[in-house]
Amino acid sequence: MNELYNILSIFITSGLLLACGLMFLFTFIPDNPLLGNYRKARYVMIGAYLFFIAIAVAEYLSGDPSVQNVLLMQAVTLVIASSQAFLFTFAMLALVDVQFPGWRHIFREAAVVLLFIVAIFTVYTCCSETFFQAAFYGFTVIYALSLVRYTVLFLKSYRQFRCRIDNYYSGEEARRLRWIVLSFFSALAVGIMALLSAVFMSILVALLYAIIFDAFYLFFAVRFINYPHQFQVIEQAIDDAPATRNDTKTEHTTFAALEKQIEHWVTNKGFTEQRITLGALAALLHTNNKYLSTYINTFKKQTFREWINELRIEEAQSLLLQYPEMKINEIASKTGFLDKSHFLRQFKKQNKQSPTVWRNQAHTHNSPV
View 1 (cartoon, rainbow, N blue to C red):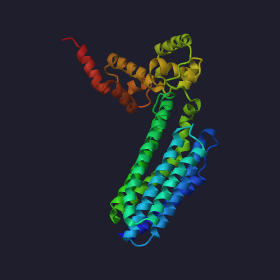
View 2 (view 1 turned 90 degrees about the horizontal axis):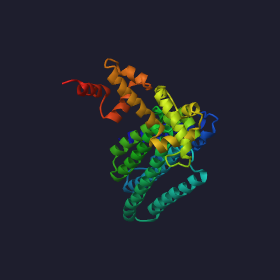
View 3 (view 1 turned 30 degrees about the vertical axis):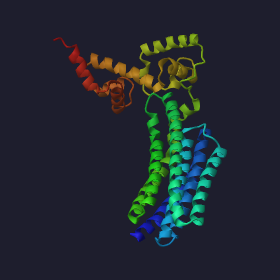
């Protein structure tokens, strides 16, 4: 079992991380200024993967699993977990926040993590085994608090990112980057598993952790490398940066004129156009994206996507009542949805039931007794 773990940790894990690091380094990145943060994140991840290779080699060279080696493994595991939490959090933030701080902020955060790592190895080297075992739990509490901070920081930025996307597109473009959330919480889970493997030290637990570790880092590398291609789908929303819900400085008299134009557009069922975006509607109404977004957020109390989908579902309800024999696929297409699954999700979200059940109940209530 020990030999299997050594082969997995030194050869498979190190080879996998090295291959992924080289892919990060040589992958072509389009010449797009908005991908500046992605370039920063790429350099961070190259450093992360090389760092983890060094840790794997050091672990292999650490020797037999004596008591002293167990303590070393606990220290190394805590170092890996804290480093992973920092590196992945700031890499994820760089992907969802175009206003992400520069290198100075990253280096300042890195200095705090480095100080934490130095403290761990100082206590391990200079103090007794008993003292280190007690200090290990203290370091674990500090690490757990940092995870809470990183999670709050990431979720705040991701919510703002989702709001921007939903304020520009009427479809499900934001779902294309849900892997970022999955990656963040997967990295969080891997870090927690690392600590558990250090506390409940056994070769079987370490082997299971190594397999999950390799699977996660391979998944993340593939998704990360494909990010520039996905970014092309959403760069308009990020570039245009529509106003937030709190931007209400525009005069209400001007909004009144815009409202008449929007009412005319709704009456003509312009919302049934597939792939309608905030930019396309703003051009049609001879206004700008920020202005239109401010109106929708302020007076409709919704994002652009929520507003369009509400109009489409209302139209779908009308069709369900007028044409009892019309198929759900056809209704979805006529109301602007690209596919049936998206239509079903939105209908259930607003009505708490499927279109078929809703239509049957509506006809039952309207039937003469």
